[in-house]
Length: 328
Ligand code: GFB
Image (tube, rainbow, N blue to C red; front, top):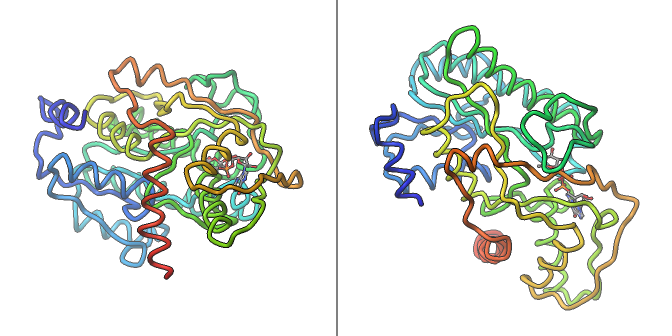
């Protein structure tokens, strides 16, 4: 698939040169690091990368100088303040403020400094809490948001609209992709602030190692979530950069939907924890369901490859090798 996508990009598209200068913003995160792996696998040799320490994307003047100096040709905007349901609920000012600053600075500077095409990445939480399922792109702004993540959602909706506005006013090729819940290597495994999948992986692992009898999972276990491996997302991003130039954002989902209870059972099995599951119903469930309708992306010719079970095994291997080993 990667080869096919690579050759699709090279055939007549503007990303024809493997030496095209591509700025991947947020290259140390879950999404950015997967995109860098994918681009390198495809043979792209001129990636421009900056750590947070080297370039603070919330600082407008620094972002302008960076673009003036580096003049990248393509930009993939994977830098964002992200977190799970607890972090979103606890730090609303950070989630709206930091994300608005990063995306406004990067999108505007990219346009001003002649970037040919920009891909902005959002999230499935942009859709109304009770959107029709599976959720089509057209459900955007048709109803109230889920309160636990509305601040992040508003920032991401503003990002989509910023890309659309620059396309309408300036004819500039800015596109937006909306991934479903993601997981994989380089995820954040923080016990409170991470997303459900890495949080459970760590909790089950620590319970196994410590010989605990029970692992407590948040909420009721009934919410449904769709999970996409980040390598599939990276594949889809490169595909969209090569193949899509539309006004509307594009959903990027896997179609693999499970309840939180089913996810917990699956993670428990992959990690090899043999104790019981408990439930903390004082913690929020969040939105009841958010399955993406990814038929638009499928109609362009892209399909995901990684099954949830395989992806969980690979992520657990990565966790053991990288997080546990580093803490020993
Ligand atoms: O992944 P998560 O934090 O975010 O939670 P959302 C998903 C579901 O898992 C919720 C339950 O129903 C949680 O109650 N859950 C169970 C847990 N145990 C845990 C745990 O230990 N940690 C966490 N984090 N959850 C996020 C948004 O919503 O989705 C973000 O907050 C982003 O903004 C992301 O859009 C994709 O799926 O509810």
